[in-house]
Length: 275
Image (tube, rainbow, N blue to C red; front, side):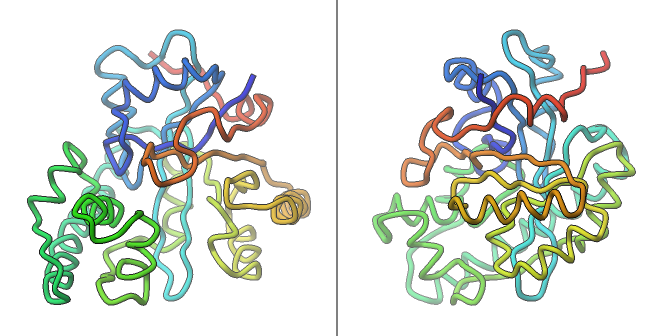
């Protein structure tokens, strides 16, 4: 049976609530699923506190996706099986969330100065209960307003790094993130290495304490996957993969179960929850 180690919920910039994501994963026939929201563990905490983690009918791996600071490249690091109530982790995430809110206001101001009639309230309606307000929420709002035809177009034109409405925010360095994940009992994995845009930097990351690489990813072609599998072998790293599912209509995959990995890759990460 298939599995998926990279998904998002409404606790960051996904469309499904944690509960809805679990039901969709079961309906798709997944054996394992990891919830890896951006800079928050609220989703898995929500499931735990409502008695839905551990889950019946599917094995859930708690996770997170950190955005790392880098001057040029996009570096995201997945953390699996961290102690989600660890005080240091929660303090760091509070700092990141505060930075996201400041960035959010600055980006809305930039968009308004560019002539877009977007308001913070418009974005918050889409963001719902998410504390990790992101560019994706802004992009979805612009699409709903009819300004752009897709989230990708909104990023390409105004929101991507180097575009007119982009604003940076507080992020930890890759080394800080890797060390934090390990101190909290987790496993750090380099997310979607092709999106880093520089394989020399990817290899530098793989030598810096990373324990796995996300070789299987929707935007990796066959040659990309082979290259990253070879890197995993070279550095003796765990191989993972996932769909990066958000549930956004204009973003592949639109449904869970379209892009999956073999169970044996997920089972090596799974740990029985301590109740």
